[in-house]
Amino acid sequence: MTRLTSALPTRESSPHPTPTRIEPSADVSLKIDVDRLSFFYGDKRALEDISIQIRPNMVTAFIGPSGCGKSTFLRTLNRMNDIIPGARVEGRVSIDGENIYRPGVDVVAVRRQVGMVFQKSNPFPKSIFENVAYGLRINKLTTNRSELAGRVEESLQQAALWDEVKDRLHESALALSGGQQQRLCIARALAVKPDILLMDEPASALDPIATQRIEELIYHLKAKFTIVIVTHNMQQAARVSDFTAFFWLGRLVEYERTDKMFTAPSEKLTEDYLTGRFG
Amino acid sequence: MERVVRHFQEELEALQSRLLEMGGLAEERVSAAVQSLVNRNITAIERVLYGDEPINALHVEIDNRCFKLLALHQPMATDLRAIVAAVKINTDLERVGDLAVNIAEAAKRYATHPPVKKLIDIPQMGDIAQGMLHDALDAFVRRDTALAQQVLNEDDRLDSLKTQIFRELLEYMLKDLATVEPALDLILVSRHLERIGDHATNVAEDVIFMVSALDVRHHTPNTSV
Image (tube, rainbow over all chains, first blue to last red; front, side, top):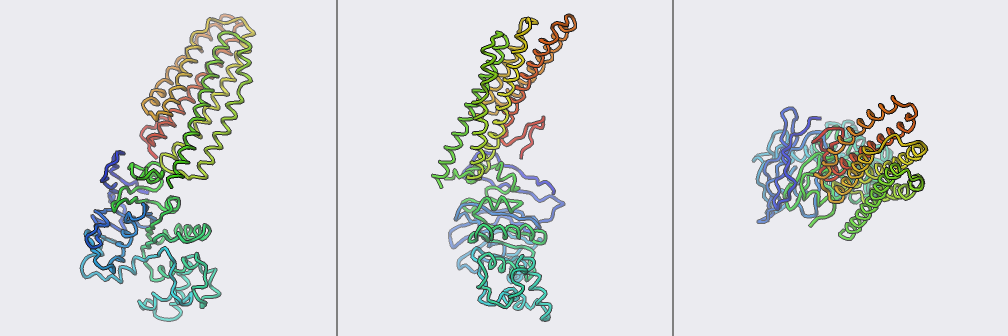
């Protein structure tokens, strides 16, 4: 892997730390390039000047205490915050070089390219098959029944659920276990062929075995997708991600290779958070 | 959360104090072994020979403490480095205890022969090695990388004394075959003391890693994890 050139900040803590900016090197393409993004809920600034470059086919984890802005930031990456009244964005989010906040951008197309999986699995009260087929149908992405069935199978395969459900595709999705429901939601997100997958605490409601399956799935999916995951579980971030970003009070404090972040973080704030000496 | 952190901190402090206790024992035993060699005191020699048990018990206890802290608390960043360093320092200190026994074994054999010469350089090596160990442990407690670096610098003095001792004793052996056996034991002792210095160096390197996350082993400065 190309070594990142990062201007490492000093270890001294400052009330307003400068985020570690990882500059893109010429030979590595960027999947997501966020430049000085601020986000406001009405007058309240929830995110302040976030700049981050996310690489393709990598898992990037966002960590930080509750209310630090990591989920808000995740949702700015596919414009899921647009629906919040009074919400406003400043700055730029480029995906494959295109600013998704440019006027005239097709938001539906953005969300097709940037899929999302939520903390609580939310299958539709329909059959397993119809859950996965739903996005394909409303977007008219398939031309005939066999193509539709093929895409549903492919998505369920990718989400490592196919073997468990292939004989009961037309049963209700709500009859599946929590872990299976979450993988179904991943299959549903994958069906429309996104290239980025945003995951907001995808395993926080699951038992350790279901969690492990989701983590293994994430590991396999990164060969095809760029994955950004928000998690409160630091061990999970350490296990699944290649890069980790630490947020605090709406700022990006540190963005580093995960192995470096969890063994030798550069910022004292990160150190204090990871070692539980926060506040 | 705070209670759990405090509990972890207490465990970490207990680990540190046990490690220091072990370091103190290892230092004492090195000093006692060299003294018993110089004084040809059989009682003192045997005390070193058969007194390794407290260090061995601490070796096992400290490993268990580290193992539990890793499994139960899954520490990260500086805490993780502190525990990894403790595991390694523990091994080094246990080896120092073994080397003190090796010195006592040589001293026991040496005492059965007439002295080859007045011992000057070996006690000096003993003092340096013991001082290095002491400073490395001090650096560990105070998280003092400058002091750890001094320990690394001291190692060269031990190496050159060992070479000097070897050359000198070689002359004795060439001149008088009766000195070969006791002189070889002195060479062995100098070798053991030099190894003790190496273990102190390892401890100092672990301290630098623990404090600053820099890996300075094998002359690879500025390699951070």
